[in-house]
Image (cartoon, rainbow, N blue to C red; front, side):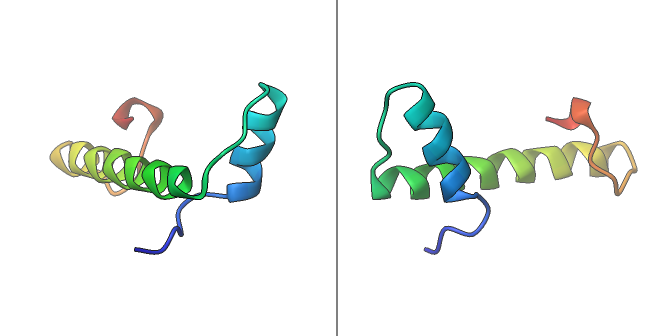
Length: 58
């Protein structure tokens, strides 16, 4: 599965600022989490008869 929803550089920069490194496998796990969050938000928006994701959907 390709990592395509996240910006690796931004994640690495934030982790490095906190004194951490990021493993290659971690990027896939983060991408998977983002996919789940977006899917859940779209279901909530759809249930509220909207096609726009709002902050409260997350």
